[in-house]
Image (cartoon, rainbow, N blue to C red):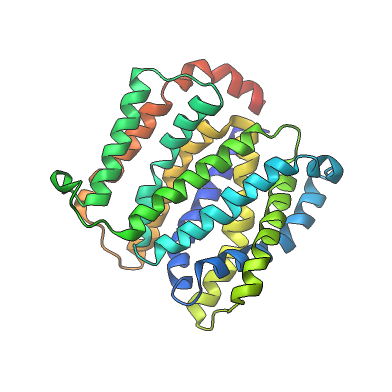
Length: 301
């Protein structure tokens, strides 16, 4: 696969995810986070399996032999990430959630060091701390001197669980070998649905009634759930989780553009925090530019 296709896939995936943050805010007004998670994947699974079969024609027996990894991916990426995100959006704005999500690439780098045995230098460590400072500016709205006494927004704190779940999902996706990415996405989504069924039987399913929420759940079930996950998993299978992770910063950019278009104001101190996160992520990934150039060229060639 050519490099420009991977870049296009990553940009498109994050464009859809940026809209996800905005539309998700409308949907959580009418649906419970668990119900949103279940409904979006019911919509998505109907599309994912035919797409996987049409494009990849996978050996499904080989796919299901990786059921342990697929089950973990379902737990963290399909259920955990989305449940915590929709819970967070009940208490915080779409833009603020997206800004905190900007820490995700740096966390992916850190987990790559721990679990994939990659190495960090002083520049990378500095980048991680700068990213952390940026997130603290967003969380405290610039009141760093009150870091231990401030009454934090509950949604902002829940976002930390969101990025943790996505980091684990991305690392798991990188460790899977020989499984087509769309088929892996479809299989993990199906397992996620099966895990959620007992909860749905207990709590029941309540569909949205308002037009913004209906449009929102359809958007979430198709573009972020199918398009973004497929494009993301194809990309990390080509260039790895840590290199693809840098593109997650585009979620904040796209969310800010959409939010501004809808009339939402952006506090200056949070813009500063977001810029620090971007700088930190750049530094945390800087070491790969020379060492991985040859590897990336081979992967994309």
